[in-house]
Amino acid sequence: MKALGHINSVDNNGLRWIDINEPNRSTLTTLADTYSLHPLNIEDCLSKIQVPKMDKYSNSVFIVIHYPLYSNGVPKNVQLSIFMGFNFLITVHKGEIKPIADLFNACKVDEEHRRSIMGNSPAFLLHKIIDAIIDELLHVLIKIEGNIEDIEDLVFAENVSAIRAITDIRREILALRRIILPLRRIVTDVARESHQFSSTDLAPYWNDVKDHLEKAIEVLDTANETINIYKDTDFILSTEKTNKILAVLTIVFTLSIPATLIGTFYGMNIILPGGIEDEPWLFLGKYTTLIVIITMSMASALFMFYYFYRRGWLYEK
Image 1 (cartoon, helix red, strand yellow):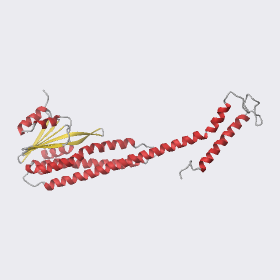
Image 2 (cartoon, helix red, strand yellow):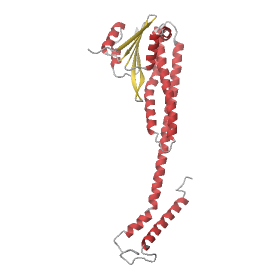
Image 3 (cartoon, helix red, strand yellow):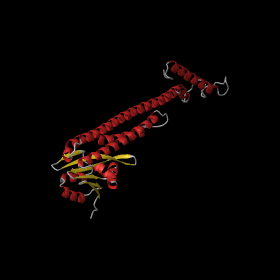
Image 4 (cartoon, rainbow, N blue to C red):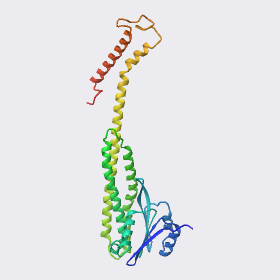
């Protein structure tokens, strides 16, 4: 028989918070019977990953959001499912989500923290959870901004490639965009519907969450724009470096053309002036022909070099 998922619960003032890590069908079916949860939402919790959404029912709300879990520095989006009723809140996730774990542990070990976090309504607890998730995402983004500043040095370094670091940061930003941007719609929907699950007005609290979310989106957009600029800059600098190398090789090849041409003629099996088939030149000794050929090749190369220099092809104007 398959083991039940890891379930923890904490109670405060008639409100129960149930946290389930690594859920399975048996566990969720039992909770669905107890709290009248919709079967389709149970299937959503068991699926690999769902699109962020909010489903509203007469006595409950079902929310799906995503959160990044890092494995070897690579972010992987995991699903966080939340059921909220009039006297309960259930969080379901695969893998430990740090802000939820921190809040839950604080509620377990300290009564004052429990009253502060859970308040007297599930809507207030939901606000605390989403706010903690957004704040954690903001910390991740600030860390990414620091990494982007380090990449700036790599981009302008002569002998270091920055393309790998840029690619890793862009991958991380893309994963976070898939998480943060849908949160704007989810938070708006939840703020609108959560009033029925609280006896007090939570609008100021949700407005504060929205402010934090907008700040996170602003940081995300700035990071995305900056890393794209660095990508383009790195491409331009790499292209310029490659062009310089190709220019030097082209010049070397061009200057070697006279020697190659002359050497090709004297390598043919035909009679040429100064060749071994004819009377060799000896006015400079037995190496006269070699000296003449080298001199002709160097003179041609020097003339070409002087011409290139006068045209400004050998230096930046």
